[in-house]
Image (cartoon, rainbow, N blue to C red; front, side, top):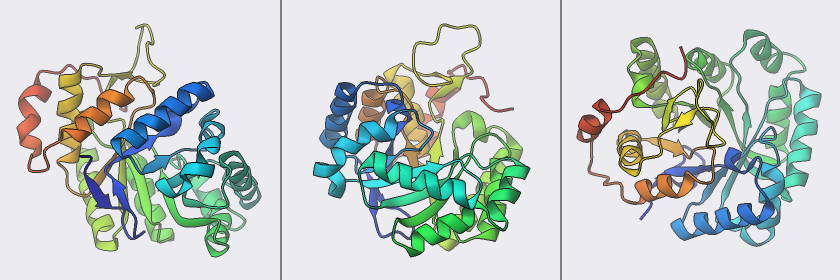
Length: 285
C-alpha cells in the first residue's frame, strides 16, 4: 500500500509519492492514458504539473472530466509579473480542463531579479493571492532547484505564508554540509508552520555528461530496482516529506513499486549499505 500523509495545512491526505508530470512533456495521449491507469492502479492521488512542462497539461486535461475528484492537482507558473502569471494561470486551467487547481506554485524561483519582480509591486505574487481569493487556486506554493534554493525559499516564506515548498533532496545533496544545514532549518520552519515539503531529484545519478541520454530526465537516473528501492526508502524514511516521481514514464513503475514496498518502520540508516556502494555525482555544485 502506498503510504499517505497530510499535505501540510491543505486538509488533503496525499500519497507520499506525487506524480511528477514532467514525464508527460513529450509523450502521446495514448502513453499518457496508460500512465494515468498506472497511477490509479497504485492509488496515487496527487499530480504535480507545470505550464512549462511541454504538453503535460494538455495530456492531463482529458483525464479530468472523469477523474478530477481522484487527484489533488497542482501546477506552476514561471512568469514573474502579475499580468504574465494571471494569463498563464487561465491558460493552464483551459489546458487542464478544470475550473480550479488545488495548488499553484511559483516555479523555479532562484534568481534575485526574478524574486524581486515576483514579490514586488505588480509582481506574480499579486496574481497568486488574487487567484486564491477568487477560488481559482486553493493553495499557493514555491519551487526551486540548485543549492541556493533554500535561501530563496526562506525569503519567500518570510514574504508570504506559502502552503508548500519543493526542492531537491537526496543522499548526495545531504552530503553537502551547507545544503544539509539549510535543509534542516527549512524543514524546522515548515514543520512549525505546517507547510508541505515536496522533494525532487531523488534518483539522480548525476549529469548525463557524454553518455547517451536514454530517458527524458535531464539528469542520468538510477535504473536498477534495488538502487531505486534504497533511494526511495531513504527519502521516505525522512518523516514529513513527499517524493515527486522522476520525469520519465518508463521509470515511474520502478519508483512506484519501491514506494509501495516501503516499510514505514525503516530508518535512513537501514539503506546506508546499499547507498554507500552507489557511484553518484552531485547534480548541483
